[in-house]
Length: 399
Image 1 (cartoon, rainbow, N blue to C red):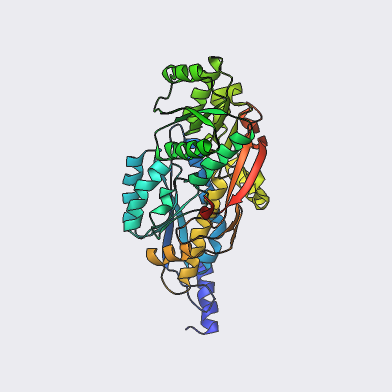
Image 2 (cartoon, rainbow, N blue to C red):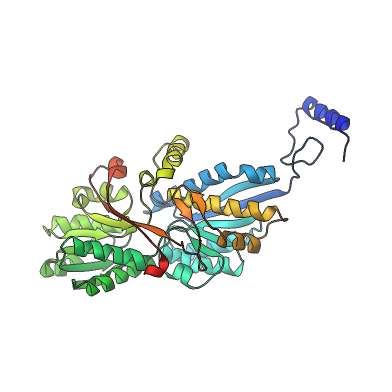
């Protein structure tokens, strides 16, 4: 250890040479030891039809790291965010996952948007003990496989589907025609909706999957013949918006309902007035629905020039949970993937902008929020003004 006087001499020399003291340099000046770089990866669609939500996830996580990294910097760690574009495609997500686990500086992943991408990608993370915190994935299989490194800070479709069915029943629907997109997410939530709707006494007029993106005539014709009270679409907004618009153009008056894949201002941008008045369920309400998220929303807009997209606040919290785990582990030595994954799973009563977060033994929230929202305008700029109709907290054991 240098004497205090020598410390002053060293500082004077550094200043004279216009040098910057490396992050965490250990000496009598009180800085921490410089240990190196740790990285947080994000995986979400940054291109293509679902990129609005995917970019929101990336940007939310980036803001979260920026605001949470001070403690790690004091401990001598530089933190970087490394974004990956999974294009909403399982094969791309898996290829990216292999690149992610090959980088030993990456200690956590915030992702994905699509359950169909997250499920196979998380198999790669599991084999490398790399922790994943999902801000958006709702398919039960995400956590039901029992992987100790896979967690989510949103609810599950085996609750979200029944929440939608119970709402449909409360609105007087007697028959429903169900369409889904054949993905793990869309088909899964549609099946949970169907099963609960049937238990509640609703007539299932049809249940059909499609990968069609532009012309839905062949699907709309049997819907027209059945004349249901309600049409439920299990899938994502970019496909659903085109479908809903064409349904209205055929003169069908059925009400519309969907899950949180509808939650994007792109839905009315594509579908226009066709979706005004429809409802959707979601596990991630707008930032305005979370009392603690006001500052987050203001900071997000200041940095990125727009209001936060759905799941951006969840990505913000996901990144901060990973950072908190790394900080916790670093107090006992150099953090590694297994110890960070264990620290994340042990998260209890952590205060985030989306609520208080505690993980159960599977990586699910002990209590998750579910919302029913009414679309009030065809103007995408007014998406944040959609009306909250119902909000409940439900634990995974309640499904």
